[in-house]
Image (cartoon, rainbow, N blue to C red; front, side):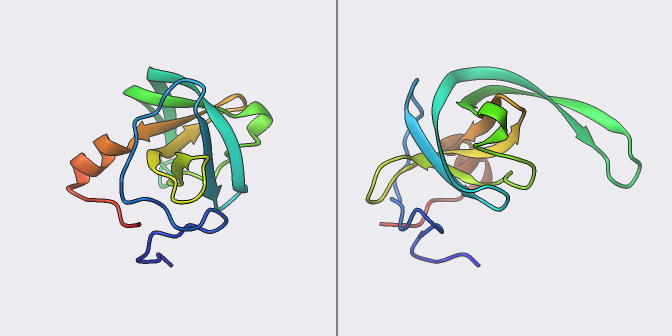
Length: 129
């Protein structure tokens, strides 16, 4: 369920304003698989190649993403399969601002689309305080 006030499980209400990511910025997310976890921004403007599997056919294909946020994910402690779609927010309280939308990861890094690009593409805006 989505709360109209922008509150996220374990994080609480978020800001309706967004923020660009910065190197070494502390970040957090609440995901389906790992719950509330904390990390930091490791890289900006990264080019990321992700291999996807077509579930109906079992075949794979690769997609390249440019301009991505890289977050440290040591031994998959920040994100795991099932956490895709989690909102990456500042690790502050109260009312952290969104910085990215997590979509992929490996054993050392997690990757997020910059939130302003996601919102612009969807013609959407944030809810929150």
